[in-house]
Length: 285
Length: 334
Image (tube, rainbow over all chains, first blue to last red; front, side, top):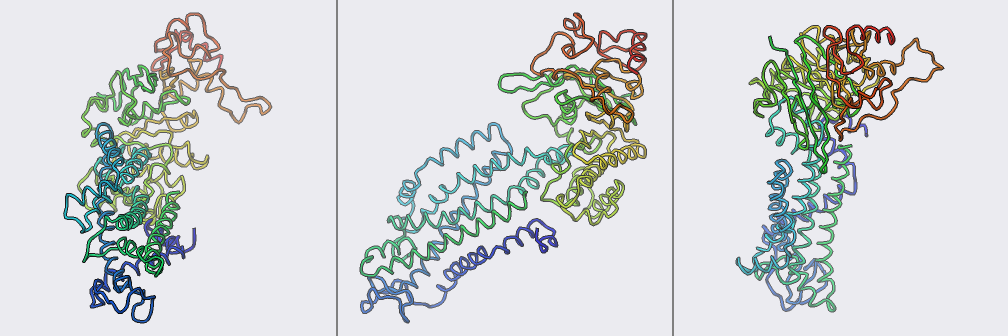
């Protein structure tokens, strides 16, 4: 335990100290936040229209006017990436957020056990066996198409691991003697669930949520690439990659650059997630 | 007048994989207010199961299959869960073997203490903190304010057990069940904790049910002892009676196995031959017969009932029948 860690009293504080001592993780967190904030904020300002075609400037390499070059219709790739990022992050955060419902299910299954556990676990197994791309196609058919409604399919795909994880964690925690001690001293079940159980499973769950987020980005772009993505005038990263593929020989940067951004995003999220896991794991020891 | 705790013909069974483990069989005990009762036995003798049955903390695989547990005349086995939880912590409390495992690592000591108090009484957080600090000082943690801010990992084992004791005694219970409270601690700390418990019982009139495998602990803090073997009471009496006049061969064997300062160092420690009785089988005869040096044909056929060998001193052994006989064995082994 480092000197600084000792001066911090709360577990959350110590986890934070350990996390920020991990230089790679801090850099990755910075990179991710930079991309995220750029996509959320910059499109609010009057930048170049991502849909405006410029027939004079087709497939340009990155230059002073077009920082990331232009695509086959002469549209500004940087502007498209920024606008596309907004929608991509919207889809991913919504999906990852909705998947938190799995946490509720998992905790309920673990805490109540018995029949409730059996019903939730079998239901979860059923959900886990749904082919996600088929579900996405189905959702695109039922709901207004081309607007990113496949985020619900992604949420469904992210849920089962979270249910299993939280159920197992709860079972593990309930086995701990301090739960027995709390019961012996007359602490109510509600307080035990809300206090002891939730607090003690929060570390691994937070890590899982980070993993879910990077999974969501990957799945989202894959779906966009496969053509399940959004329609004009909306734009999203997977669609940009798909369009870049059309000119992969003439202007390879049009696919390389978007892929690089996605790669950096996912990689930095994973590094952050791993660092969080390490920081939390030390606390549990 | 009611006994503070009276266990009547209690039986507890575990079901596991189609087999039944008879952990506690037909056990009857009494604990009067202001007394400390020790329950001694080796691993698997059912002593912990007994304690957990009282607090209704048995795992799902276990069930009370017979008998009653009366706390001040109220039957704990028949009481609704909600009522029992209100009683637990309020009038009867429990401390456990490993204090490190019993404190939630992600809450500060102070918040765990106040949580317990506020579960039972409608008081403000500030009041609860004051009472908690007072209790911490009472169990010998002088720097109470600092301890309250700390998390369990920062405390030593002895301090953690003191915190557990403080937590258990916050609401002023009448009965404390101590499930091997000193087993996980260093010998010197063990002694301090035992002294503390003894002091607390003397000051507050608290009764303690002591689960232990050590006769040393019993001699130090208890008034009465019950020796458990194979889930049954082998012998039951006052500490003085048992140490001076053990009637059951098992108790005699246990006492002989305790090393003393005077014993010859060259001589190996004496042990009881054989292995503990299986909890899965319900033997027809005396559960100790297979290891007993004085076992006769009758012991294997017929289970001895608990009977009085001298006033207030009971043993479940055919050989220890009449008071006169008990006296003779007392001379033999005293």
